[in-house]
Length: 553
Image (cartoon, rainbow, N blue to C red; front, side, top):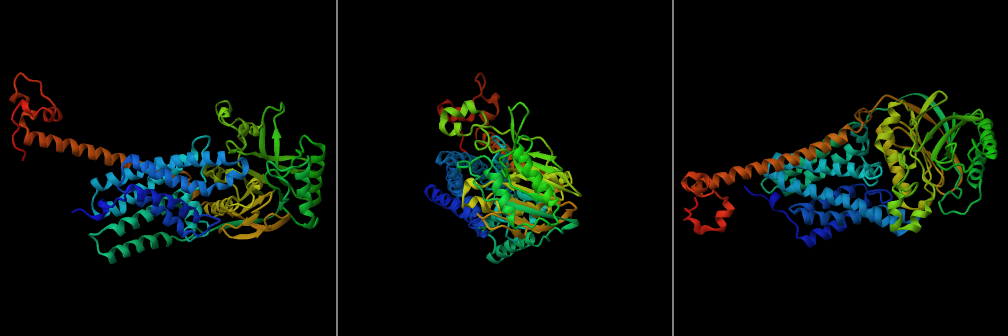
């Protein structure tokens, strides 16, 4: 019997209003809004606005929802190069959002027609919708030019009870669970043929079952005492500075750190030194003085170059005993920030902006894990922290602690700092490893393997933080599975959608043949119409004078 499940469909004007509001609500669940339950509300508003739509209107509704979310969520990008890059990136991500919305609305149309029962609509349908949502996040996070994985709904849950789930299913797996829960609750609320008490109980059981999953136990062996230095120097792209200013600011920030400190590692941020010690005598002198004075290796962000000067890398070098003891080059330089892909194609659209990025950084190829003394550190430079594969790589290479170096000076006192810190906290939970995150200006923190902040430097001040971290051992299910969870749930969503469409097509064909045979035998059997080419049902309906149609049964 028909239910409100299949009947619910907002008028287009109202769906657009709901979609416009959904993005703002969705963003409020992320840092710096940090009201994490609003993420679930935002997801629900998006899904309700897509129910019962056709593909064209679903694309429009999804585009509005995507724009309302990204224009707010990444508004900090406008501080760097202005409004045009902010609008362009937001629009691109909104287009992905719109494409995913079309798939979701097709799932709402097709899946209940094939599996119309309570299990089909409250269990299978939410799984398909969540899988398609995760598929959209996967595509946007990997394409084009390496993708932009910012804004995945799971990234809002670093301080919620759902956060520890990332150790089991990873960030994409948590996005899937969140959307599936919301979709299931929406379907339960709309099942008019099921008692209200039963629906409430089913929804509560689903949420409780997810939250009842215990936190993955963290294990450790040994410790390392690490100092992070936040220089608060003129590290922004457009900041006025003289050569050596960044290096000097890092040195001055260490004034409160006693020379006799028993340290295993000193960490400077991305762009911590504007003097490369491998090519600059003063830089070498300072690096030697710091490393020798504290009797500890120094890990610092430095721009390195090839011997011929044709290539440049955003690098993190480990300086010890007067030489480079290890090096990692950023794998995921930011498109249109650290390099311009297809420069000749994009330059005519905004030559002034494109020409601001005069130097293109080359993506690195070195391993993400770096041996440092008696332990192994996984190195992540700024945007690398959002790339799931890079985190998997360092864990498989034996990283016991993650060192995240970043330069967010271009984003000022915006949500970007809090958003990146939230991602970093989720990485600690996901890998069961402590994270030492060191920035040029803000959000320098030490995070333990349980995702808790245990040390830090006041934002936009110069200073140091020293903490003895427990070196992680063991492996979480999320690290073992890696991207398999993301690919699996995405495949399930897409495969179920395609299967539903194929089955609907098969049912239509059988129904059409049955109608032709029952009501128009002349069409089904050409022998009843000798000497005439059999015509289709549509052709005969267009020309009923060809013969007397029998009454339909």
